[in-house]
Each structure stands twice: as C-alpha cells, then as structure tokens.
Image (cartoon, rainbow, N blue to C red; front, side, top):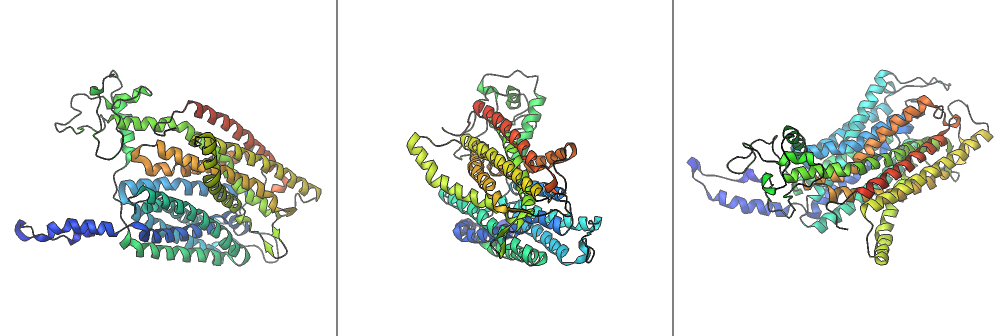
Length: 565
C-alpha cells in the first residue's frame, strides 16, 4: 500500500515524492508489527482454536449419536479428519511461502472454517439434513447419501480452515518482530494459547453440545469464527506482511533431476569443480565442498560447459545446483528415518485418542449426582497433562539436570523418553480395558441393543491419558527442536510443522491398521463391550516396543548437522 503513495513527475521528471517515499516506507514498516499487531493475531488464534476444538473434540459423539454412524466407522472417519487437519498445515506453509503470503492464507483459512461450521450447524438444526429415528422406537435410519455429502462437505471445509490457520498465523505472528527474543516470547504465548483455547473449546462448547443442543454448540463455534475474521481484518493496518519468496521444494527437485542428468560424470574432489552459492549477507554458513555421503547427489553441483552465464548466474537451473542445495537435500534424507519413527510413535496415540472416547461413552461419566463428563471432552486430560508437564520440565527438571550433569538433554534423548512414556500409556490402557470388559461380563451387559454403560467410572481412563501427556511433553518439543535446528535455512517454516505432518500421517496409518484388524480379527465389533479392545492395545504395545528399538538404531547412527552438543 505504501508504494501507491509515491509520486513522480511528468515526462520523466522526478518530483520530491520519489526521494521522500523511501523514508516514508521505512517509517511505515517501523510503525507496524510488534505486540500491538500480535494482540489481534493472538485474539484471532484464541477464537479459532476454541471454535475448532468445539466441533473436532465431539465429532465422534456427533457421528454416532446424531448421524447413526457405527462406532468403529466413526473413529475411522475421525482418524481421516484428524489426519487431514494435521497434514494441511504443510499446504498452508507452501502457499504462504511461495505464492500468497501468511495474511492471505490465514484470511482464506478463517473463511473456509466459517463456511464449514455454518453448514455443520445446519445439519444439526434442519431435520432433513440428518437421519431420524422412528417415534417411540429405538430403530434409527442410516444416513442417506445426501446426508453424508452435506456432512462431509461441511467437515472438509471446517478441517481445511482449522488445519491451515494454526501454523500460518504463527508464522505471521513471528514476522512482527525483529528481535529473536521477542520471537521466542511470542512462540511461548502462541503454544500456551493453543493449549488453553483447546481446553476451553473441548470443555465449554462440548458441554453445551451434549447438555443443551448440537445446533447451539455449533452455532457458538460459527459466531466465534466470524468474530475472529472481523478481528483479524481490523488488525491488518498494524501487521507486517511477509512477501512470498518462492518454493524451496523446487530446488530440492532440481537437485534430483540435475544429479540424474549428470550421473555419468566423475565426482571431483576439488572445490573449484563445483558451483557455490553466493552468501547474500545473512548470517548463515554456506557449504563449499559436498560431503562424501550420498555421493550420487554431488553430481548436481558439478559445473559443465554452458551451465554458467557470463555474470556467474546459473544458465540451466535443472542441470546445475549449488553445493548448499545438495547438502540441504542430504540433510532431509538423513533425518527421514527419525521422522518415520515419529510417525510410528504417533500411530498408537491416534488410535488411543479416538478409542478412549468410545470407552468413555460405554462407562459411567458422572462426577457427583449433577455433573456428567462429556465423552468428547475426555481427551483434554492429555492436553492438560501435556501443558503442565511441559512447564514442569522447562522450569524444574531440565535446569536441575543441567546443573547435575553439566549437559542439556538433546532432542533425540527427549524423543526417546517420549517413546517410553507413550508405550507405558498403552500398557495402562490395555489393563484398564481388560478390567472394563470383565466388569461388563460380570454384569451381563454384552450384546445389549445400542451398547450398555458399564458400571465403572470413566476416571479409570485418566491415568493412561496423563501418561500420554507426559510422553508428549518430551517428544513434541524434542521433535520440533530437532527439525528446526537441523532443517535447511530455506525450510524453517516447514520444519516447525513436521511434527504436525507426522501426526497427520499417523492418523491415516492408524485408520489402515484398524481396518486390517477389523478384517482379520473379531476384536472391534460395533459394540465394544463384545469386542477385545484390550488386544488391540496390546498389539500396539508390541508395535511401540519394536518402533522404540528402531528409533534407538536411528539415534545411534544419526549425526547432528547444525546442533552443537
């Protein structure tokens, strides 16, 4: 907008406006950003997280109770939806960095979320948009194709908005500061806001949906979403806007193509035979000689006739890359085995998150005589546990451990500790489910129409969820630190979303594994009181143990590239 204020003379003669435009633009940039801009950004994030968790946390209950979807099918649908919301941030990052900028991505995301939640509200308020049950009978009709088309269209739009807005708005917030300390402080508040708003949405709005009406609960989500859009747009005059810089993924693809094209060339041991990136003045290290690992990729940086223009620029981008670009791709290849273990680490947790809701539905959720825990809110126990233990570790354990040993825990050590706690949580879950099934058998509750509530308090689910939170307090920050510090400079935005991508893939993997178990075993019938969910948990305990062994092998051979021990 500032550029529009520049003036120029007629017939090529410049006026004083040209000379004054640069100072004006600099003053305008200095006046933008800072904590005032972050007030609008944080308010938007808070509302979007409350609205998002308000429908996501209770989705399984809505599918089962209102749309008459079978319980295991509902968990499968939730796995796919949760997977999508965690994979979509990378799409938002690519669009923001390469084409649109963070502001436009956040704006479009909020609009998408608003439209999706409005349609979701209509499915809860208009009777012809959902299946119905016969009056005075327990017979309920399955949803029609129209019902499912409208429902999943709403969920898709809402999931796209909820998934993309989180990391895009975090990038926009960090861009409001020049000082790294201020950026770090913003990220602390950013993470805290996500946790706190998630708890509010998962408790407050879910309680309204369960106790008053689904239409009112979803309507509140839509209203909050609309207010967020207004707040975000009003704050536009205070934001610093980041400019798209082009996709770093193109350069990675160029390395593979160039190395393939030059595969017959001999790999040189002299630096002069390779193309070197020119340091643009930023404080970063530029590789001058390719490392011996993955030597095939070194072909991409070998100079041949016609590759370089007279001014030193690359004449054929898909035949020549810099040494730094080659090393950036190697870094991603080295870290991929660790990333794969993170996917397998999150897979059992994805299953446990949704099956815990099914267990809660079939258990006594009363606290006293007047309050009943909403089944969809059971997952907030893990959320609260994660937030509490992250603070505890950051303020007490890590500093004291540093004083005793003289060393901080490395990211891989944190991730490994998370593996142990998460596997332990599955053991606890299997034991608790065995007790729940025994109680159901003792009270002859198996095989009843619609499933029966077992006389066992849902509080029994809390220990496994608390241990899940403890594990996430270790491995979640550990993964973020590892990717952020090891990823190429050009991919720092993508680095912070890698844990989200791992979780997203894990939900899809968990859906596939659950489908496999349903097809080859009888452990997961529609009524979990007749199933063997405990065997499912024991299966994932074994998977977790094998994955932990695989992770230890990866950690043994991994060498940090950028992290100083």
